Length: 212
Image (cartoon, rainbow, N blue to C red; front, top):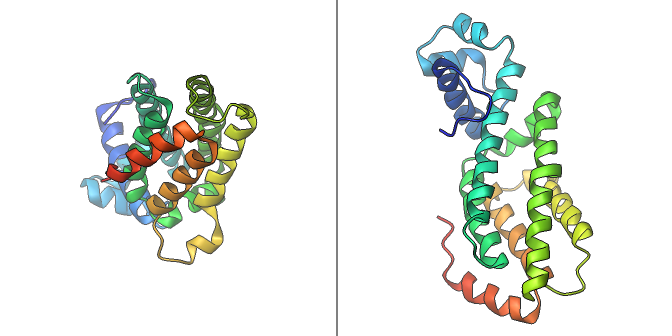
């Protein structure tokens, strides 16, 4: 597990790792501290000694997951590939993340754990937004993206559509998984901003893309 800037003890990281896995696959609200303790072979009292409340544990889990995503963004940005390849490479990583997600996880965070959800919002508004701006400007300069793009507006639209795709109630009622929703969102975004040159690159890459 990637260790974020805030250093946790070995025991805290063990709890965060197990709790994060359960929250992601089963939803945040339904997973109890008792269940986390049982999975760890640890007493509930010990967990509450490490984390005063479940809400604090949830926030720490979100912090660690988001630090992992920040590291992924940095690593992909450092590959030096063209902007379309960069978006697809990061997309592959995001698909793997969303494959494990319960449909309830994000909904639970937003509704029941506002402090943890604020961390997600901050990540979207700062880290994702800044990465998008850099990628869009690079794509315009390389002529892979349309030269008339309003990059700041497009970055905000991307984040808004991503929110909608992840949280839309109508999709929650279907059997469509979050990773499938995200893949469609990603491809829709890239297609919409590509120039003719960029679209040719995109379509050639999509033929052989492997999200697994």
